[in-house]
Image (cartoon, rainbow, N blue to C red; front, side, top):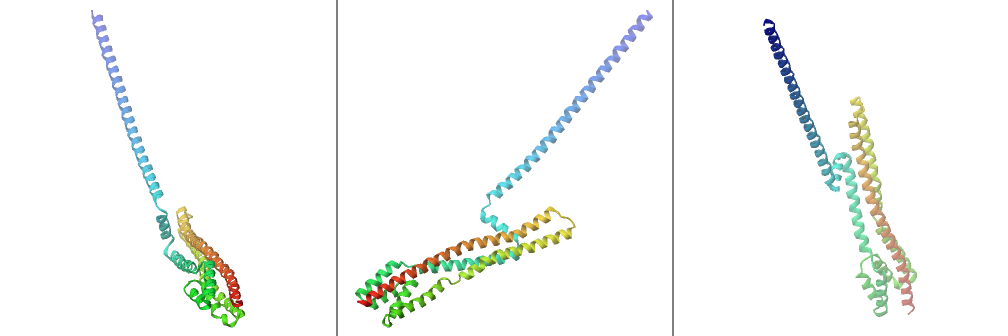
Length: 280
């Protein structure tokens, strides 16, 4: 009987211990699962925050890139001009303004100097046939341009002979050709000054950049890149000024050559008309 009670007692103790162990293991497993879930949630939250931060950074970068792309050429040019510095950009701007002013003045003058030579020759010839020298002179007075002025000078000296008329036309034609080429040398000077001022600003900017590197004691990309960018901007704007003025200068030279060729051809025809009129 005692043995039976002892066995039951031992079995109960073993059962109770086993149940406690099983319960403890279940609690441990539950705690591990809870910790795993917590860690997973924390990792997920961290990943989400990182993704959101990266997305925000990417969105900001894209927005800045879009805003940069949406800037007009005028805005970009204005920003770069300011970055170049007023000390070196101001002379380049002054050269550009003066050059453009002379270009506009020459374009207006040369366009006003352009005349329909054939129409004027026909009018002068008809006037000589119907009204004589005085009628032809009136037509030349009422016609603008160097060609009409040359014809007037020739008609004004018809009484002195054809040779004197020819000499007068050649002399006065040389004066008018000089007027046509007026200020072109100044435009050529401004074309040369633009890049020269730009190169000078670049050299000075490079010296300042090397001074900054020497003071910093380190070749930092920020110091080097910043100084180089500001230094090279003066050269860029100097070359832009030279290119624009050179295009207009070439146009003006071509226009002058065209007017001079017209004057030479028309004066030859005019002399032939005078010779025919004097023979009559």
